[in-house]
Image 1 (cartoon, rainbow, N blue to C red):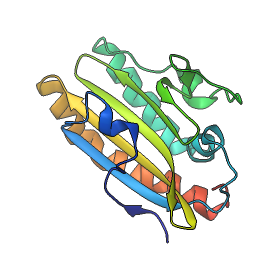
Image 2: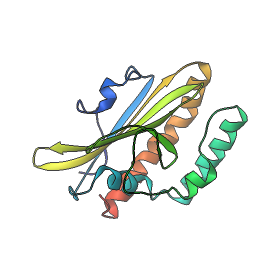
Image 3: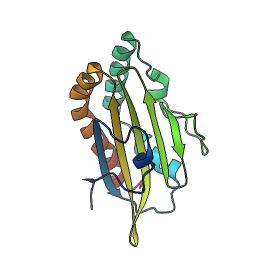
Length: 173
């Protein structure tokens, strides 16, 4: 099994989040051959190996977002995320504040004027096998959120699939 699009897993805390009735949502599943990995290790196996072209796009997007008064991660958070072994709700993991963390799932994201988003990394059991499911949900607050998603969603979908495929191919998962 490679990276496949799937439904938001019923076990995900995103199903209980107030923004679960989202304007946009997607989920992708990939095999987890290293089932001993903790959720922090899985998160950084995916998001700790972002290619330079993707980081550059994120930095440009964030510069534009800041001109509109939106909260965005710093260049340092994008280029060199701090990797620790332990995190708590309210701290940042990579560029995003953590909203939820458990042994099998971490949810990070951001609330902004135009939209709120949550990114879940879930370690899931598939019978005897394990997988990782990356899900994103966004709730828009105004027309700017809808316009933003119109332009960002194609890059988002490609980016998530690319990060997951790279992690599988490199044996990090």
